[in-house]
Length: 319
Image (cartoon, rainbow, N blue to C red; front, side):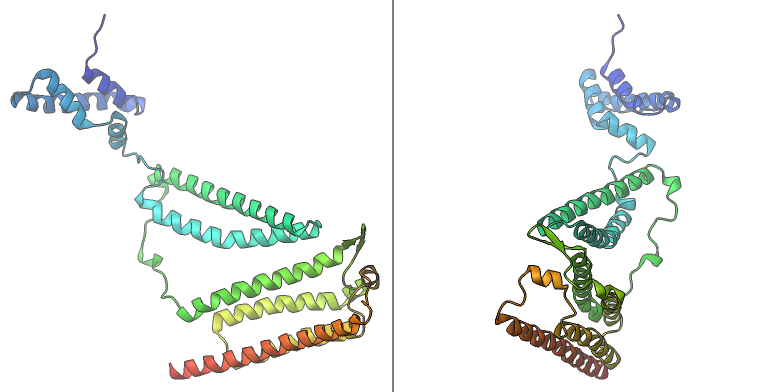
């Protein structure tokens, strides 16, 4: 019966982790390396069996030794591409997830889902999308890590240096996000309300369907312009031109909305009948309160824009 030594077992455990065509060369090199180190221990007076064991322990895990021989990384993504992977994942999550969330909310609202169902479905979609983004991006980089010839040009260079951060623009980013999210939700509710609200088992549109001929597209178009306006404020900061544009947008939205409300053309008559409108003597009071609130919010927004434009002008003059 053939006996095997610790060296034989160690060499076999190492070479089995490399391609067949490289096993012979690795076997020879490894046995020479083990023999040289073992002889050094023997010259120091170490027992032969102990010398062999100490030599193999110094060499370490056979799988790690084979990976080092093949120049094969033992991590999923090593330091060479880790930062590039991290930047790309952050960008993908920041760009894709907001659009996915908006699309999910709109789809659920159009399907007539309840608020709780919309929230739960959106959270589930966001988690699933984030998981897929991270998984597939990581898989691509793991393959690149093991195919260095296919990843040329991904190393860091001076072109990767970021621009100096505009602190003023960074402070305006939360306002941009809040504005776009609010306007998108507002537009979604307008469309969702026209698909029908169920009252006592019967569905009614909230706004008068006749408004689709002009006014609902008008208001939806203004909401899109408001989003563009929010982007302009983020890009350039407040100035008197934008303050004037803010005034025009507020007038273009508020005046028709109040006119339709006070002339009883805004809401669908069947919807109002279903909710029992007018609510006795409270009907006139309610309309008055709504009118004052709309005018007050509009006036506050116009004044706030003018104040911000004035302050921004002073800051630019001082700078």
